[in-house]
Image (cartoon, rainbow, N blue to C red; front, top):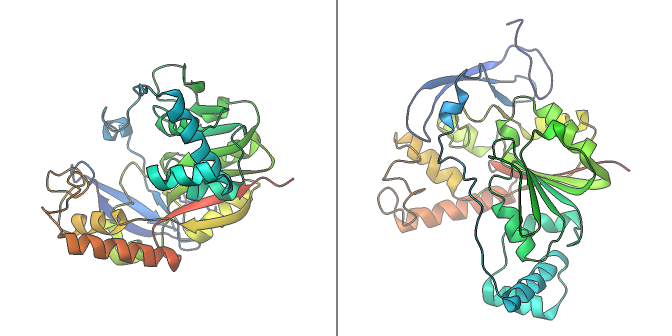
Length: 323
């Protein structure tokens, strides 16, 4: 057993299983080794590249502030829709939702029981686009933090802060991390920071890929959400429970929320087609260059079934700070 290995999720030192995977988002096809914990099944990169920033080119994230012009009536209608999305109450909001469509994020925000006046922090907010959508739907106390943004800024009443999570202070009613925790070097320290910033009895909502499920068992190192070398640590379901408990949280709920990307992306990698290849369905939503419309529909049905079976590759976890 290697003396240097310790699982970053469950802290065990059992000899890990070793896997070699290629960088396939951009198609450099460089090899990276991942270690699979023999105890909890979580995955972590064996050695983080010294030039990791090279794998986050300038177009990976956008930090440009979205410019949005809305009329007062649009604002009013969207806020009614937001109220209905969070509470299920309000005839106008219900009708607007039917006419304009309900934002999909309400499905995973609703279990946290949020009010539009609650203090919400998004970690890894990028340009603040998600927060902008929330403010359009009536949320009034929004903050984002991201160490990679150019500078602090404020727009539409949203505060965007250029800083590390460890340097944040204050108390929040909800903290949201969307596909961010798999990119951090020390996920336990990150979760402890979330707990520190969260009011007792409130929730951190964390979406992340999950190891050990159908896509990993089926595609192995061609699993699209392995995403070497950007994803440094990927929890298994059991591993997520363990590390959440170690950080002082209760795992109140874990929903499986994957879509067809789990399947078509992995199938592309099996065929040696990078995610940003011109043939990729990720760039060509018609899918005609790789998959037929019937195949894409089958992927969507299969993903929905895997969600129902709690065996898909993406979860939305509700971590509650005890009272």
